[in-house]
Length: 407
Image (cartoon, rainbow, N blue to C red):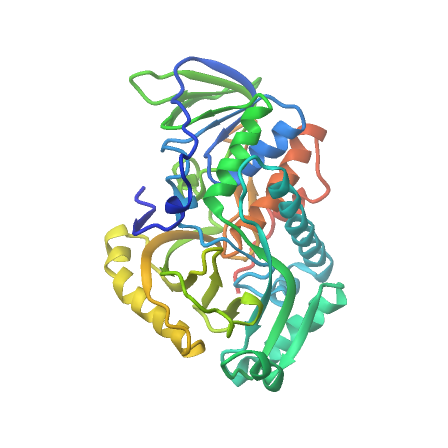
């Protein structure tokens, strides 16, 4: 699949990236992880830390998939509000989901501190502003819900926003201690840690076949080598390409766009360099980078055709820059990198773990959505419990067999 096109920024931030060989022999392991992006790397990390023998394979060179296009904004909230999710699934379930996300956010910071490659994890506050006065009630409801759960959030009015930002918005939800990171360095750091714990990492190793066996999983790599991999458990973590293994009625794919500017000499008008996004749908979001660039993303389009996606890259770049300059007219930012890529989402707004009769011993990780890194952090921890302890009390929240709500 043609996952993204354009000029990518993250690969320019990594000097001498790790190189992983192709699989050249038959192997056996406790857990086979198919996909070496963020979801697969997090799963492999947790399982290797618990002492399991892990093998990770990816059909591309490691880091060349969607990881290099991820804008790595790590926020609790996604496109569907927690209030909407609670109306669908009940406040008890969504309250647990919120707490799992908050725990995962804190754990991501701990993990990054242990990795052999610095992932540039930085805590950032987040401003979620009402794009119009009609959206003020939804901001208030989301604040009421999150504050009842004890989350560090505040409800800001127009005067509070204008006091610290150069733009005027009618209301906002201000959240403390969310985060950003470098997704490519994060993946390399996770995989190098897995390797140091005895795990095996293979790039340019495509899975093209399998044998259904009730005792163990047996997968085969592409011809002409066609090596065999036997495992007690398999995690399919191929991201947007999970559908190559199994279709899922609760998942869909869209196109999304991003632009990364040249380094900006002065960001002092950007209060605390907060993560910023809005209530409008589709929304625009933005963050900064350690070398003082600005990342602006959004302009989502309902297309799954690479050629159609790519025809909109330049226009989307210009619209994203226009949206940024409306908020920060005093920051002379100029685009340097821009891209369009596929983004998978669930219809109901919750991430998923898929179990399918056609794939015994296997789990499909679908940390889909606009806060995918955080969702994958949650799912990888749940799966680690399932595989090493036999169960997780939180698995039922994320299983693909849950009732589907799409309103």
